[in-house]
Structure formats: structure tokens, C-alpha cells
Image 1 (tube, one colour):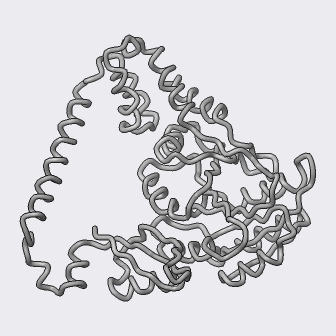
Image 2 (image 1 turned 135 degrees about the horizontal axis):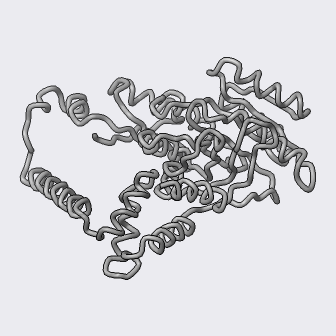
Image 3 (image 1 turned 60 degrees about the vertical axis):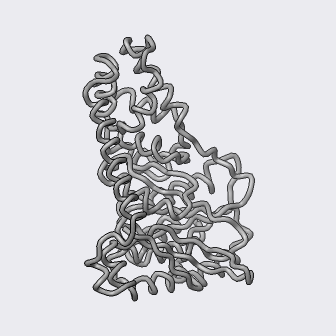
Length: 361
């Protein structure tokens, strides 16, 4: 894949430039606002495009049939092949039992429970030759301690007014989670906070009505917004509120159009920073994990809210996501009841769930 940058006044226009050149066979790598030398803010969208398509659109169809243009390109190709061979040799050594019988068994158990081999190897390699590697119980305890130290929690801070936008794949429970947060802030803490709800989801049938229903029950202001300009104006109008919670459309990691639209909202020019929380289901599949992070991370995530704790007994893949991508957890949604089934995130709660799963192994 080849990366190319498109610049325009807003993310949508930059993306449209990319589509005009390459069609829809592209993938967003990043999208951000950059201040140029003339002090003007512009949007830069970086897209990834297949090399053959890039060569065809940039240099014509003849470019598809040319070999390496010079010795430097040939050398880079050879280095890439050598690197691949070395990685295969390294992986082969590990698979053949480099760590010893006890450590290999412990590693296999953690991998079966969803923890990535690359993370386990990064912890185990420095322990080669130590007595820890020969004691299964001690090694399990050591790995759990490393997990505990690696996990991060975003503390609940309500000392200052804030805007919190929830994003995530379709069906993870963003709207219900927003209702729980709204009830918590407005009624369940040491003082009632002034809360407003904004809905940006114009795609899902009934999404606006669902959030409006919760808002009516809790007697909380609720607004449906369709454009970035209207969003900015509404944020200004709600400047006296303590907390503004923003619901967004559920997105497949491959739904480029919705991503571009959401980026527009995130980059709206407003005085306050928007805290972006990724709502991630505890039932996340290992195969989807990398795609979810790769796409949603470009919204400059501040934390992860984990939903659907009540729908699984296996938390290894979820834990693996938190270990690999270094994101802090902020809240856990543990059921369907509003507002009861919401907890402030804690390492202990997640580790207890995972340890129970490990003990079953």
C-alpha cells in the first residue's frame, strides 16, 4: 500500500479529492487539522491505496509493467525479504519451545485465553534463565502482575465542565451507555450536574427517538444535530452546562463515509476539547480487534468504555486489546439496566474476571 496526503478546507473535501483520483478502493490512515504558515487551519487526510492503483493513476498504465527503477529500490526489496526471513526464524525458535516446558505451557494457556503472543514474548524473553520460568504458579502470578501494571485507568474528573463524545462499532451499546452516564452525572453523585445530550446519529432508525426517550424520563435537555456547523453552534449555546454527552452513529471499521463525517464533528472549532471515548464490547473478537483500533484511533481517543460485561465469561481478547494499544479504561457497562449497570473502571474488576477464566484453564 502507498500513502498519499490530500489537503482541503475540511476533511470531507479532502476525502472527496482522494475518491475523485482513486475511487473508493482506499483506506483512511489519518485525518487531522494542521495550521499552515499563513495561519490558516486546513484538513489533511492521509489515505492508503494499493501500489498498482497508485502507479497507474500517478504515472499511467505503463508504470504497472516496469520493474525496479534503480539499485536502491532493489536493495530495499532485498532488505525487506531478509527482514521477513529473520522474523520467521525468530517465530520458529519460539514455537519450538525456547522457553522450556513449564513456561511454554503457561504461555500456551494465556494465548488460549486471548493474550497475544507478541505481548507474552516481550515479557518472557527477559526472564530466560531465571527460576521464575520453572515455576508455573510463580510465572502465572508474574504475568498477572505485569498485566496489572500495564493496564491504565482514566480517573473520573468532574471538576471542570466537559464534552464527552462516544464512538464505536455498530451494536456495542453507545446510546444505552450515554443514558447511564447522564443519569450518573445528573442524579447519582455528590451533587447534581447540569447535563445535556446531543445525538449525531442520523443513520440508525430509531436512534434519535431512543435517546430522546431516556432524556424525557430523566428531564435532561436533548438535541439532534445534522451538521458540524450546527454542532459548533449548539455547543456554544450549551456553554453553561457541566457535561455535554454526544452520541454518534455506530460504524463498521470499514465504513469510510461515516468516519469522515465523525472526524468533521471531532474537529469542530469550539473552545473546549472534546473527550472521545471508544465504546468497546467485552465480547470483541480477536479478528476484529486490530481493525477497530486502526480506524477509531485516528479520532484521538481519550479512553475506552467497555460494554456487555454480562454477555461473556471470557475476557482475554478484551484484556489483550487494552495491553496492546495502551488506552486507559474509564467505565464498565455491566448490564442493560439504566442507570444501575455502570461502574467506574478498575483494574481489579477486569483482572478478577480474567483470573477466573485462567483458573478454569
